Image (cartoon, rainbow, N blue to C red):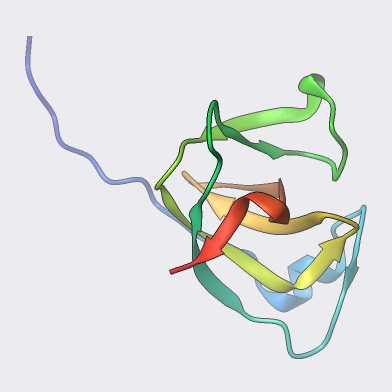
Length: 98
């Protein structure tokens, strides 16, 4: 079996694209920044909606993983994020600055 190395392409949304995302309000002056997953066990879910429902999970982010969040797009405890080529919502209580 062949071992192929690959990189995930990460293309965060532009500010204009973020304005069209449902579920939260985009603020002027927001920016993308790198953060680290800080869950104590299990994983941090990347979700299609800013709600705690298993059905809307699109990716799992494990402790110590670095990914990007957009500081200008927040809905309650959720912040807009980009990970593994996907964008969605993560619970900001489980992230820390890099």
